[in-house]
Length: 291
Image (cartoon, rainbow, N blue to C red; front, side, top):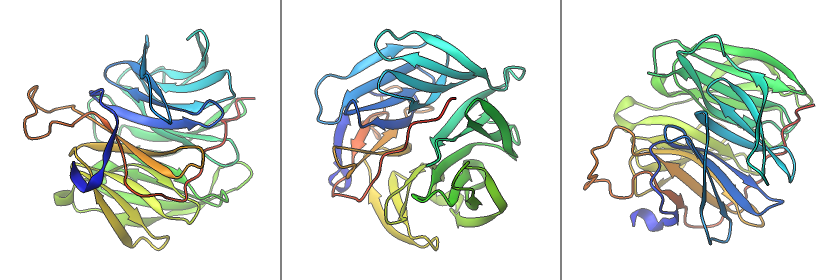
């Protein structure tokens, strides 16, 4: 196993994405976007539960101990944990059937940032939206594959990427609302020969942990954008990290089989979800504020 990484879940997702911890329930939730599945597993291991979804969803966040929020192809949905019942909270680009949701994460204020993109990754179809207490706004447009949405612990800055451009940007944010303040600045550029920036999280110390699609790696960047660590993972197409465990000190990373041959002899662990060796100073995202 590459770099000492372990297997958190051996279910192979077509496009595993959007992992989010629910500390109150001690569980990790994540999505298989193209498979239309919501997956959950206790931090400590045990049974993996797979829920069929009627829509293609890409990210999940906790609302409380009874409700999740799903970012999906046509809107934001509330999902009752006990019953699986879905209720549309607000449409999202519902008038654009050519797009779907992608990466998303909750700001310390409880605001959600959620990306959308073309279903065939068409150039310039992507955008990032802000949702807070029932209000939805578009923040950035003209992107292709929005990814790596993450926030500093104090809520004063955000990062986001366009995987197609190989670029992660940083922008100041209002700690009370999660809205951007000022212009975005380049944080990291990744040469296409090394892969592309996918999902990211930021730990208590300000380290950015970014999954490098096509690079079989989870990279750590210091606050000045310097890459300070690179951890090999046993699948090329890694997609997004999350913190789990009672103390949020363990990193897990999702991955994908999308576009690979069925036998996957040179990438046998593709699509599985991995644990990263070593402890980190992680933190749990807050609940999203829907009202």
